[in-house]
Length: 255
Image 1 (cartoon, helix red, strand yellow):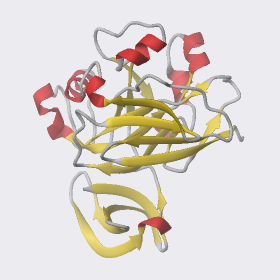
Image 2 (cartoon, rainbow, N blue to C red):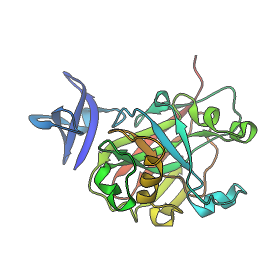
Image 3 (tube, rainbow, N blue to C red):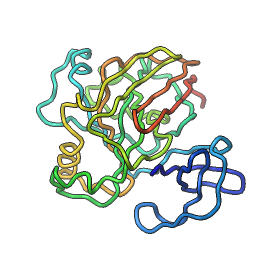
Image 4 (cartoon, rainbow, N blue to C red):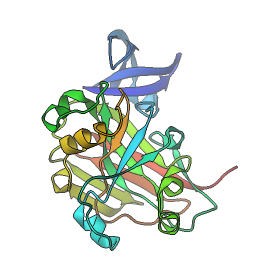
């Protein structure tokens, strides 16, 4: 099933579910009790919002060997995690803004995990039971600031630097899904999630041994090789097999 957050005529900021070319409205909490309402809006006339409002966003660095190699760094022995602020989130068709502090902003296409229940000290074999579904992520990064600072909060934390969407897919073979990124139609990134260094169950188990995961929290599972520069006017399309595509445009910073 596909869950979406959207706006439509006379329906502000609602959750819905995708039925062919329509969105059906949902009331209640999708992570607890909800019901589907017999009210439908055409999908192509709705504005899609970020599919979730996460309390926290946990990124995973260097989780594809070829990406680590192209950065000239070693693959970590344990998952390398970092945090992105919720204020960095934008949805499909949202504008990625290039901040004036950076001269090297890059895209990082990723499969994003959406947590479905509170989770602490989860064993890897129980991880999928704590996951609600999956969406697309673009972990936009100021690569020059990442190298300069040595830690990643500034480079990963700018407003508009976490693209999520277009919806949450609850039925996905996340162990073998193709992740791609195109910029202005040019293929930049392509790899299967089976090439991850640390699997999704391993990531959920590791992260939940450090911090409590809450419903709606996001885990960005790492990006394949091919991460490249973005400039104003670019069109970025992230695609994950079995979920769909998310498009964002790039613009210069506007105060």
